[in-house]
Image 1 (cartoon, rainbow over the protein chains, first blue to last red):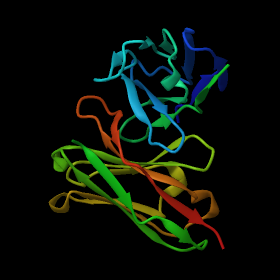
Image 2 (cartoon, rainbow over the protein chains, first blue to last red):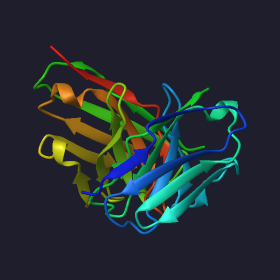
Image 3 (cartoon, each protein chain N blue to C red):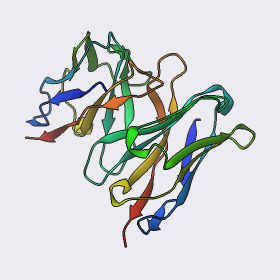
Length: 109
Length: 119
């Protein structure tokens, strides 16, 4: 099964900071990757699909890049509402399976 | 507006059974793959199962194969997860999720229902 490794597992940042989260796949997955944001007690929300396409309604400060095995989620200027946990998901082997990364918690510095 | 509303969670003893439901509205349910995803307390997300639009294909994570069954009733716009032989490690919030039409990400999620397996 394809494994996804996110780093860092947590980070502290200030409002206005540029934040980058990485997701590495154990084998090449082309651009079959999505990013989600989850706030405490809430369901995840889709931010990015196909590695770099912004989901409708998601602020443009969020962006995704990468292909193959290495991917990044960037928040260009962190806002108070962005403090949350972020997950990557690969769907290269969909529908047989799909997996999530371990998550990155973004906390207030 | 797309809505997914789960129900059926609760406390069950190890070895017991539970059936989760997900009521869908605001979209043509029969046109979409659907999934269940779970999240153990304080842990990350884990995909559990997928089902094709007409129910003809179903896939499961290895840890639930032979114990869980995903199904759907398109006439009732409903998704189900029958969970048997439950274990403590199945304790989690269970989310139903709609699979995207063009890329198989999860574009809409329900609010989740908590399943606790404990004696």
